[in-house]
Length: 84
Image (cartoon, rainbow, N blue to C red; front, side):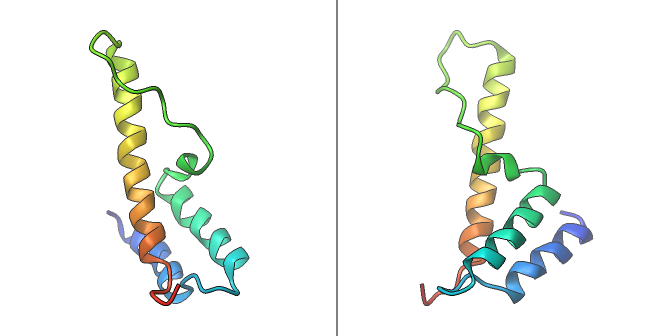
């Protein structure tokens, strides 16, 4: 993780999601996820489940999307107020 990513994540630390600031929080979340090149997981569907006979490219796409989605989930949960 680079210093730039850590600095952008601090935006979310300083502006945690509470009931009244969703619009600002979501904008900041998209900025952070875009900087980490994982914002696509908010809108793009997950590729189909892997099967044994799937080409390597499709396997890689599925695994990347799954890993990026897990990273985004952690960022989202960490940026929410514990009072929600």
